[in-house]
Length: 152
Image 1: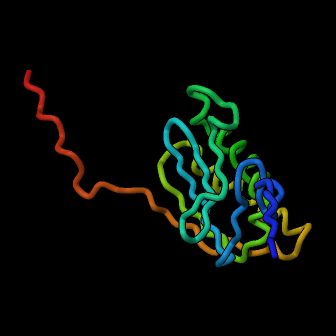
Image 2: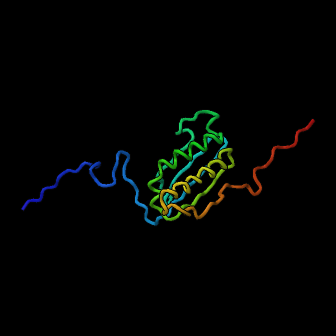
Image 3: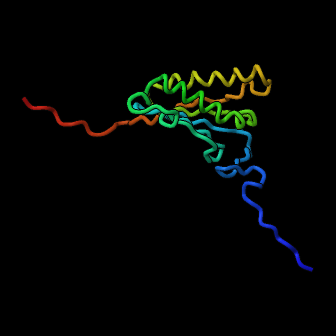
């Protein structure tokens, strides 16, 4: 009795696309990391273990140079990020947002997530999913040693 093993293409498997496996949400909880620096604004969507599901930045949205750090670029990054992650946002139960950095796009990035509630008009499941907004910017408690006084 011989058993035949057929070779299956990786793209024929369920949940596998061009860019690899589509991750399953185990805990139904996702974390959105916002990193707003002076030069760029980056958004990362992770599961509760910290594995990256999708990401977007001002550089990946087409902005170059000094325009990457603007509030307008941050708003566009959130729009593209929400389009990329809409399937993860609809499947989860809780969304936690961690904000890091003091860049100019930080406030606009947070305001851009009001569009998640706009999706709630279409689906009643999307309402009140943001459970936490936490500030995780690192603060120096004494900092570096300042330069010595100037002598005139």
